[in-house]
Image 1 (cartoon, helix red, strand yellow):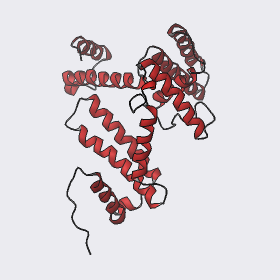
Image 2 (image 1 turned 45 degrees about the vertical axis):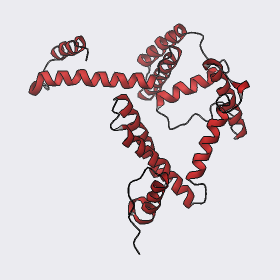
Image 3 (image 1 turned 60 degrees about the vertical axis):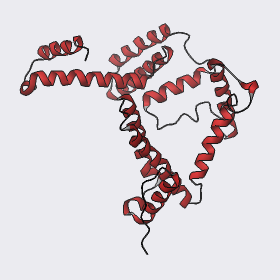
Image 4 (image 1 turned 90 degrees about the horizontal axis):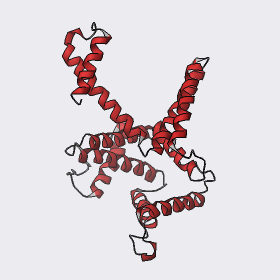
Length: 259
């Protein structure tokens, strides 16, 4: 007997049924695991971020839907293994949001301004880490985060116990020191290590200046792309034979035009 047709719907139950049928009837979906789907989950999160950065509100519902589907996919695989289901995912995040926002959900004594709310969150998350058996301060900083983002989070977490420079000027001094060590590195492996140290300090400088290093680098990538495309457009077929000086002049032209 064939399954009845499913029509697109706003009802989450329909999406759960779609996922169930895919796992039962699609050869590709059947063989997937948490490990094989995880990269797609990360990719979909980036596509959501990209649509937001591009202010592409027309595409955003679809991108958010793709990300939601990843959650549904993981929950379905867990349900098949008897671990948990989608309802448990919803309950867990609902409980966490209520627990972390007592000032919103009924406890008048817990009302805070933005600064004290941040302190409250940090103390609450610390108690949550303890309750879950995590003993190290850095234990729950996800290893799969983009490297710059993870560097900033590691440093921010360490700063909560005083392991931090006092101001951005000291970080700049460390940045200059690390840059020298890159040039002085005797081997390729050592150079790679020193470049890593340099980038780690850059992330720390961004944190001290209240700049998101990942977002700043994304913006720099976008700016480079715009200006390089200007060079390509002007040079056309001469792109491969133009001198560096000519390309640099066009780069400055793009910069002057606000590209």
